[in-house]
Length: 90
Image (tube, rainbow, N blue to C red; front, side):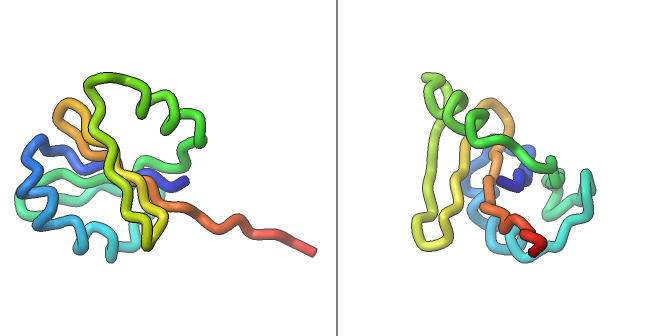
């Protein structure tokens, strides 16, 4: 899963920039500022990280079922987890 971190605790602001964030093609560890909010590509994250974070009481979990995207909100950050397609060489 690819992780994009959005550094804000303001849900309304996050919602306003969410689609724009999804449409950006980030380079590895690239950081950008969108409407005053720092957004960064945080690399690949193993599935067990997401499961461990979901179990914490201070983490809000959101799911975009149509795109298989998971969003975790904790502290001052929203983490957007996007499935990545593995390249298989035959």
